[in-house]
Length: 460
Image 1 (cartoon, rainbow, N blue to C red):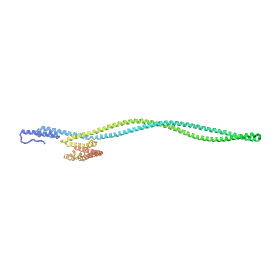
Image 2 (image 1 turned 30 degrees about the vertical axis):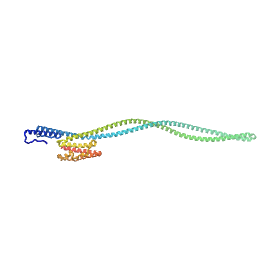
Image 3 (image 1 turned 90 degrees about the vertical axis):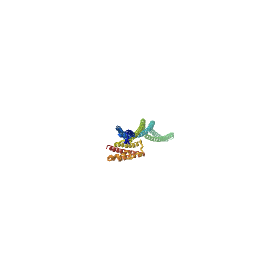
Image 4 (image 1 turned 180 degrees about the vertical axis):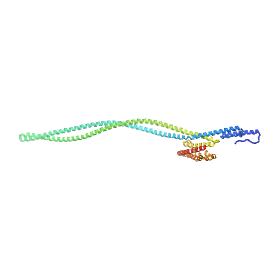
């Protein structure tokens, strides 16, 4: 790489000039290498100055050490970021909360509508019960009037019954008088017969008396006949009145029983009116309570809607935060890869640290792919032999670890890790989030085993 001083036969001046040119060119090449990221040591022979060469090499060693230190710090920072897997749980939790609040908002709106319908129904019932109460009161008043009329009718019927019984008693007395008149007629008829007999005995002198006696007899017989007819009619009247009295007595008994039922019905109607009033009062109170509940429910619905908006905003902010963290991790990884691309004198321990981050970043990308922050081309997922760890594992630099248990255990988990990255990506691209999540969980297990084996190799 560097120019050597000529050993030809030159004079001292030419040799010095050649030496100066060579030293200048070597310094230029060394500086160019540093600018291009390659740290190059120089010797006293390269620049002709032992002290300057020593200072240069100390500077290069310091720059290289600081560069390695920076790379490892950036690598450690990236590892820290890729282990922030709580972001997914946080975002999923907020998404669940957001979905829950959406459901609660919809339910509260339905509840408010239902309560409003109930309020309208209760108000309608209140109006109906109020009308029913008024009708019941009016009906009760009409029934009371009707029952009062029935009670008066009971009294009138009772009075008629008493009057008919009085008539019965008077017909008995009339019969007694008729019997007397009939007796008198019989006596008169007997006397007229006796007078006729005496007139016949008197002969010519008794003819006038015989005529009178015959007229008296006729009158007595006519009276007797009339009295018999009267007695017959009065008997029939008495029989009819007796039957009427019996019927009226039966009706009176029934009416007395009916009066008791009427009184019971009147009490029942009054009780119904009282109960209707109580129902109306209860419905009115329920209507008031429903109106209060409607107001409270409306307020709750408004608060839930506001919380729903806040949760949606929180979800958006969490998504933005998650996306921002992933973007930061990509920027940090780009810086890391640019720094690693430069020639670094990395020891196995430092190289394995970088390999750990290489695999964490792939798990991190799958993780963020499922969150919707990254898109992975299946063709960009290398095999277990193409990655930095694979090249080291199957190369000569890993020979000193080949008998280590962790080294032998590492291969199967490393192979499976690459396979799972492809499986997760294929499932996600097919919209099969469940299998993508399943592959990610298995990736996490394999990744921990890979890191565990690498850490053992680092510390061996």
